[in-house]
Length: 239
Image (cartoon, rainbow, N blue to C red; front, side):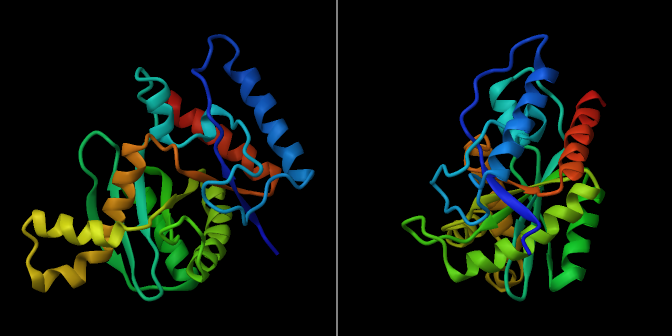
């Protein structure tokens, strides 16, 4: 049973003053109604706007919020994740300087999911940007389904901790990672070991360069977890 749903973000104007809380409540209510009516589908392909809805500002990715409001300095770091069958690369950044590679995990299943959440907290990240494999023409692949399955479970656990999860097109990031490692002088013997972490760097770099326009939030279906995400994001912004 699907426990989370990916939502493509619709274009938003700049937030007004004095009505932010009311607008957030109205938007999340609209989102739930659309989901209940079947307009939001977890399987919608990148580039399509099925189920696109205006999310509360507190659920937008950090890069999107900073792009809309240069005076907004809230939000924590972003944890970039390059999921693989055997290895998962991690990187961290905030969009101010280039993201930095963290490590490569050789874990699977629940151990991997719990470790990702622990690393996010250790790195003071409040969002996970996870690469979604797609073909050159933007179509999803069998690997896309594997990633969506894991991310659906992860999003529920992340929401329980007040962390948001987003999917980001990762097409071509492996090649970009190789070029980047060569330009940074990473020795050939170390490239295979570090390639997944640098692929995560490229995922984050794409996310920041586009101001989060291509990121799709993966929301738990449980309304109480959605509310918890909104409350946690507001609290983090105040801090």
